Length: 241
Image 1 (cartoon, rainbow, N blue to C red):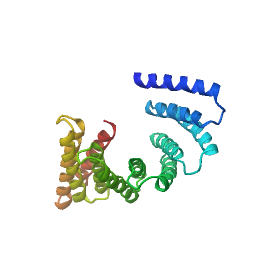
Image 2: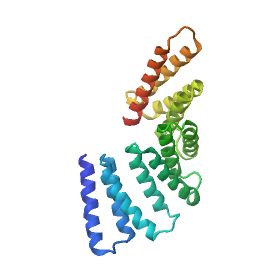
Image 3: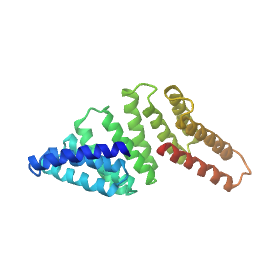
Image 4: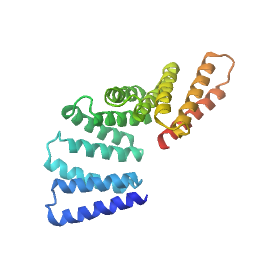
C-alpha cells in the first residue's frame, strides 16, 4: 500500500502542474487522469478509479482518432474497474471496444491483444459464457505461445484458465492435460514451495477424483458436489495469490 501512496502522490503532483499549464482538454491531462485511476484500481478504490478513468476517456474521445491505441488502453482500464466491481456486462462492453481497436491497429501477435483476450475470457467465465470464454483464452494462449519463453508464468496462467473452462464444460480429460502443462511450466519457473504450484497440484488431484467419480457407479451426488466446491476454492486461490 505504501508504494501505491507514493505513486499516487507523484501522479497528483504531475496532474496539478498540468492543470495549471495546459488546456483543460489536453491529452497529457488524460494521461495523468489514467495513471491516477490505475493506482486507485490497484488500491481497490473502484469508484475513484472509475471517475478518473472516465475523465481520461472524455478528453481522449474529443481529441484522438477513434482507433487510437490510448483509447484502447482506457477502455481496458475502465473494463477492469467494472470487472472488479462485479459489473460483468459493463466490463465486457469496454473490453470489446478495446479489442476492436487493437485488432485494427496492432500486429496479430501483440501482447496487448493477449491481455485483452484474457480479460474478455475472464469476464465471460464469470458470466457463465464458457464457450466464448474458452475461445478468448485460447486466442490469448496462442499469442503467448508465439511471443513468450516456453517457461513463462503467463503461459501457465493460460493453461490454467483453459483447464478451468474445460472442467466447467465437463471435458475433464482436456482439463487434466492443461493443468498438467501448467504445472510443468510452473515447476521450471518458480520455486517448489510457490503457492501456485501447490494450487495446480491440488486442482489436478480434484480433476482426477472427478474423472474417477464420473466413470464409477454408486457414488452420491453429494460427493460430486463436494469435489466441485473444492475445485472452485482452488481456482479462487490461484486468482488472488
